[in-house]
Length: 95
Image (cartoon, rainbow, N blue to C red; front, side, top):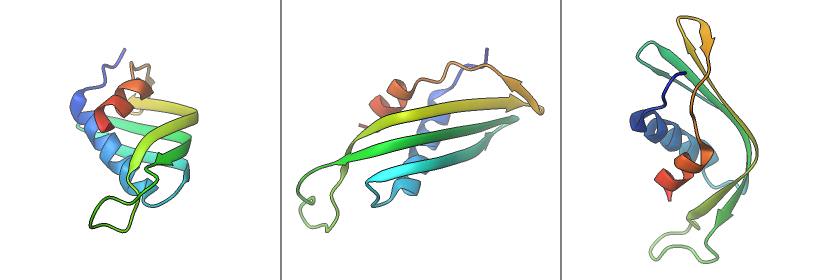
């Protein structure tokens, strides 16, 4: 089993938030390579946001990601490996 490190969670979270942007809904994939490991998060999410924009900004910050469906795959040397990815851990890191 491949153990997902905090650095992978952080990178996936950063890329996911960048891909979400100002959307209220997200359906797609986030790919990254971490050393010799290729990772992909594929998900469909509803995006919950604050009702009011943050002071001095014109956008409403994301307050929660509500997964409809998700899958996280890892591959080492082209061979798929089971992993211990947790969507809950990803969201706890983000919020």
